[in-house]
Amino acid sequence: MRNYKGRSVIRAFFITLVFSLFTASFWTVHAQRQVEDNPVAFEDWLAELKTEALEEGISQATLDAAFEGHTPNERVIELDRRQPEFTQTAEQYLERRVSPTRIRNGRAKMQEYAEVLNPSARDIAVQKRFIASIWGMETNYGTFTGDFSVVRSLMTLAYDMRRSAFFRKELMNALKILEEGHITPDKMLGSWAGAMGQGQFMPSSFFAYAYDMDGDGKKDIWTNEADVFGSIGNYLAVHGWKPDQTWGREVKLPEDMAARQALVDLTHEPNPPRACRRALRDHSKKYSLDEWQEMGVRNLDGSDLPKVVNTNIEATLITPMGLDGPAYLTYQNFRTILTYNCSNLYALGVSLLADELR
Image (cartoon, rainbow, N blue to C red):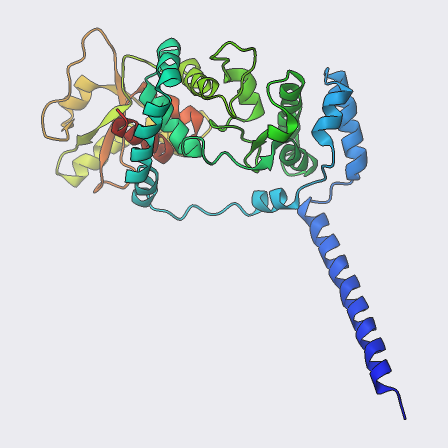
């Protein structure tokens, strides 16, 4: 009697083995493609980077703690390659970010942290509602800060060849943050792209704008709300915030659509000589409130625009939902918010949320 059962077992074993080898080979090739064929083996690349870090003043102890057990994170590469397309309308974007829940939570958080928020805003000279609004927009008031290891994410993106130079610099800055003792590696968490803490600062922004609000010698933008508020406020202050002004106002345009289009065209330059062109093209040309008044722009209720005394307010006009939608005159502080995230919708979301948190 032939042993068909034994043959079946052997056949199944070989099929499983071949399939396993094929699967392993497939995913190995796939992983190599994900890192765009860096010709240097990761271990060699990391050794060279550590040598550079030592030359930059990073201690061996910091390097050992920072990189212990870390290998490239394929999930980070996947997210970098497959960033979702922006499919929300302007109206949907604002509805979700300036929602009743976020407004309610923001008011509660401002009360909860008033003892550190109020003096931070006063000392930095940025209205507390704008600090709280950016805090809410970036991390939902500190509740969603990201759970990726910042060092591992930046290491992965620096080893990847798509934007290696940028992320290598950010990784070096992250190591310097650890060397200075502001945070420990296990607590240095953030987004997959390396944005950190409750204000979502990249490491380079940390060194440029993070603020030791409570004077303890550390700039803890992860767990210390005083430093979080001080850092967000300091970022805005350094970028030209005007504490005696608001962000702008919703306005009423002429009923005639051709006249509306002509007003919108007044603020546009075809090729603004700066980055973030999509957002900044709407802020290239500025006019005083008196000039906008003369051109037929009014407050939302139809009244005259405010008369400004002893202050030169230059405003630009944006219509993010088209000529039939809301129109806004935006001031310098709106353009300052754009430096935090160069998107008109983001800046408008921050501004409208700040009004609700007033």
